[in-house]
Image (cartoon, rainbow, N blue to C red; front, top):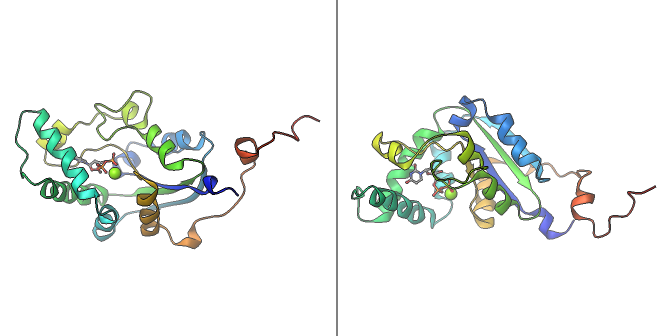
Amino acid sequence: MAIEQRERTLVLIKPDGVQRSLIGEILRRYERTGLKLVGLKFLIPDEKTVREHYMSDENWLKSVGDKSVAAYEKKGLKAPFEDPIKCGEAVLERLVKYLSSGPIAAMVWQGNEAVGIVRKITGGTEPLSSDVGTIRGDLTVDSYNLGDTDGRAVRNLIHASGSVGEAEKEIKIWFREEEIIKYRLVQESILYDVNLDGIVE
Ligand code: UDP
Ligand code: MG
């Protein structure tokens, strides 16, 4: 199998997605792209695992802090802390509560550009501004405004890895290597074979 076909990404359907009965709808959107489902489980995460998950990328605290500061500024408000890292830590505490509040579905998708394809279908972080046609844009209603007013994380149904490096670290947190299934999907010959021979009889 070519190296491109082995790119993997992690998706978590967060507790609001499960409670909204959207597991099937969300899975369908990823599945019909042609990406291959290679790992799937249903669990209630503990707080330690959620912390480990978000802290597995050393740049994440700063980048999520920047998002949070920008959201406050857009409202004409000052962020609770000047340091974006401190704001990132505040978002992390909200996320720990959110993700460990109930069952989630964890999955690993594999295929060419798996990380980018899944991020595109998932949509931007804030449902209010996520593109139409994306999961976050179509299937829920949250905003930074409401999340900050209520002192909670933005409920956006999904976690999807942001880069190949992030994906590799995150997958290890949720799946043991033997829980990731190696198998051939018949459609892979249509997606990836150099010559489409063998179709016409
Ligand atoms: N989040 C939040 N407030 C913020 C920024 C992020 O509640 O100001 C939450 C939101 O649920 C998001 C998660 O933190 O999905 C992780 O943030 P990240 O920047 O990694 O966004 P994602 O990669 O999920 O789009
Ligand atoms: Mg992220």
